[in-house]
Image (cartoon, rainbow, N blue to C red; front, side):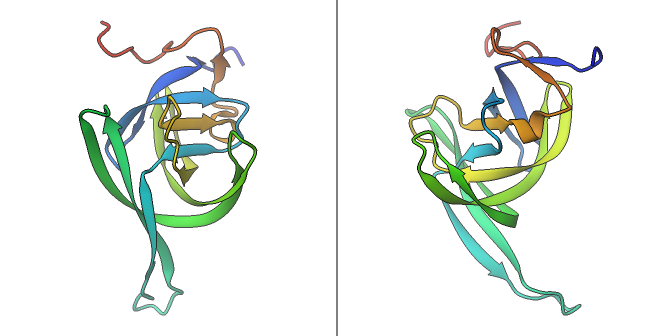
Length: 153
């Protein structure tokens, strides 16, 4: 395990397929990863010419920036499933699950992410233990061990 990178409890995350860069909380207490979206709509894609079954897609809006200067990023992705997740208040919520590439320092993986409203939370992205396991260790005493804090050199 000595060659496994150690990341801080918070790091910058890049979702290259959607060109999103945001701060993320690395939360080993959470099973799945989650992304804050302000709204989403699921749409059924018509069956293709090969006769395959129709596929579900989801269109969602990721808001980055600040409250006074929000930056809206519309995204569309294939739905790989639905998952019932207990939120921080232990309330069960059904969420769509999408799959995308996640880069966080030396960690570069493809993982499932649930879409939810994380309003009121400090981090718009949560990386859960299924995304992190066997890829890194998390140091809960430090943040930004492999990515730089904004404004720091």
